[in-house]
Image 1 (cartoon, rainbow, N blue to C red):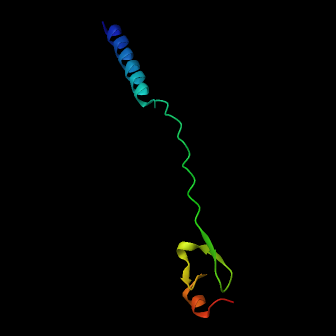
Image 2 (image 1 turned 180 degrees about the horizontal axis):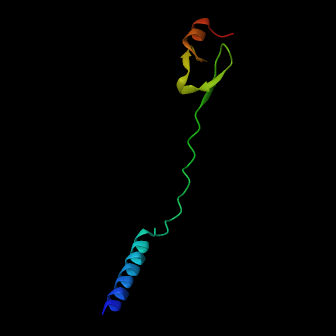
Image 3 (image 1 turned 90 degrees about the vertical axis):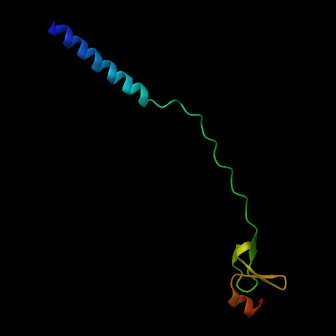
Length: 77
């Protein structure tokens, strides 16, 4: 009788391990598409020092772009 209990116990452990491994398997996921590239920003040149910077960060005065308020005060070269 005890050998049947031992066989049943071994089978229960084996089935438990098998079910645990089946649950941990991750189904194959669909490949992800790469993110679309960001839209390029318009770049402008500082009228005083010549450095290029995004137009959104530039200080604009009299149709000229400047990299900072100090260069705006100095004016174009």
